[in-house]
Image 1 (spheres, rainbow, N blue to C red):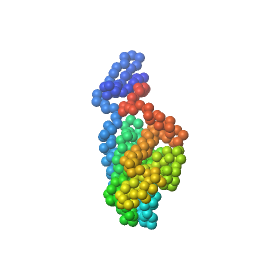
Image 2 (spheres, rainbow, N blue to C red):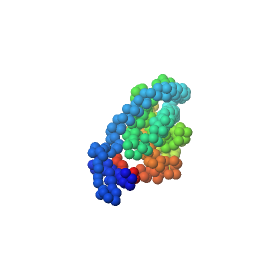
Image 3 (cartoon, rainbow, N blue to C red):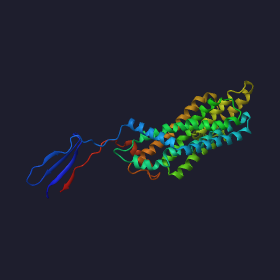
Image 4 (cartoon, rainbow, N blue to C red):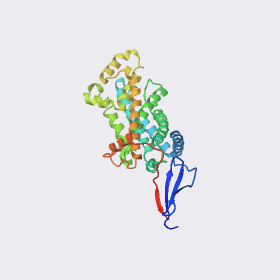
Length: 341
């Protein structure tokens, strides 16, 4: 009837909708429309992680053409580097050869990692990560992508080394060499994840190429060597994956040379400031650098999931600050609605 006002509100404790109807004559009364109304909730973290991982695995299998292209590029890159290195087989050339191998593999792994959080994934992020209540958990989404990218970290160095290994003289067995290259793939793929999470696709591709290339060529500790760097450049070089991978692979290679080459090997160590005792430290640093790049990518992804999003570097730090202090919630309160029938 005209003039009757219905006041609807959500009773979260009882899980029901409460309707208060009243006019000038009748007193307000409460009517339960449903005694078993469920409030919309996001699935738990582990449920989302399992579902998202399965979805990522299906996407990984379906991109057959992309995998074939990646494998072809890796085989070609290893072939080119192997041919170039075959002309320089002296002991003194070992650091530069290892730096070249690490840098090329790093660039390829960084570019290949762009697809994990960029490209077609951007539309999904805009639709699902910003959904608020009932949306996708950012941490579960990011971990699912990281888990599937781990397959690339395992197999990409294998394809690269399969064409590279036969052109060079090395003391390291194939599987031993491959297990060390996996650390390089882990470290540099984090750069690609960071670029795809923080930049537009065109800029992300440029960043994914330049980051490992610049840090490998100029901060690899070969030219100039670590022993000739000033204090500032030496400190910056510690953040380069190539600085640690070059020392790691060089000391592993030279440590297996005959004893009569010890004097020549010690001269190389002194010139480049390498130590065999740093092998464990180098492997740990490669793991840490990969984790740091992934942490930055995760923070940018969290900032994107906020309603305002990240439109430029000028407001990214403010968005990241909100991420650190924002309140997490799974339920959404509904304010009363007044309707006149």
